[in-house]
Image 1 (cartoon, rainbow, N blue to C red):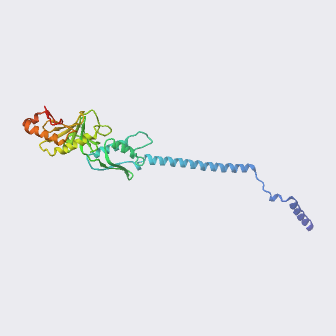
Image 2 (cartoon, rainbow, N blue to C red; image 1 turned 30 degrees about the vertical axis):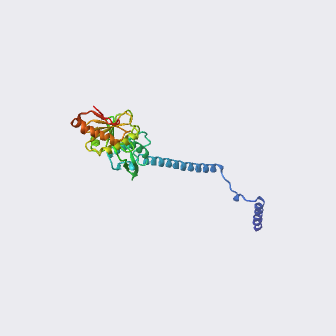
Image 3 (cartoon, helix red, strand yellow; image 1 turned 45 degrees about the vertical axis):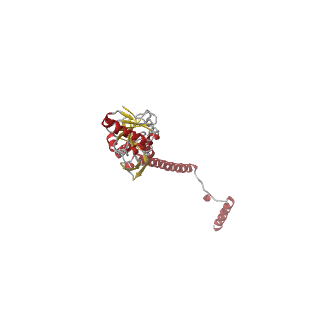
Length: 292
């Protein structure tokens, strides 16, 4: 019996040696179960992709809404800093009109992040003229506007409307008759066919230069007070309407002192008390004086 067991054991060893491996050492797999595992892995991957995609889209939509339409970045205040004749309330109204204007639903202008500073500058400078204009964001809800107004040198009157104008002949802002009369600045009425173009006074700068030279010279003749200066279509002529007196015609090609001396002589020696009743006096021609 013992030998039989040994024989069987040895014999079994030989079988292992010849076959290379026993049934117990082989690895058998069912292709059906492998396919099920692959399908499960794929489904798990697809589910994760869908969750990630949905989460990403939701986050993008939320951030878009938050940045564009939430109240977190809504403009609530407009601070304006500047001095001069420009009405700050008018500037503020221009800004609010631009902010509240809805041209495209996906471009909310009331959002401080997406506010168009260049658009605001265009709207404000369309009405006013500045040496400097700065628009900035101040916190999450405030737009700050600071400016330096161009220095006004005279009043320009055209078609019944009064404007503050600078020395170079550009209109700064519109004003009214009462403010113009109280400003102490020379008033120049344009009666010529040339009109303001893009805020630039149409008659050449030489007319404005002569007007200022004439205004300075009038200070040496305290008997005459100028109500306004007039530019017409007459070439090289600037007229001066006197307070309680006639309109006086001056030539840009003749010395201003010589013309004013003739005006003083005709008033004091010829017209005297009738000076206020005269319609006009022309001192522009040589040594002659014409009046009516």
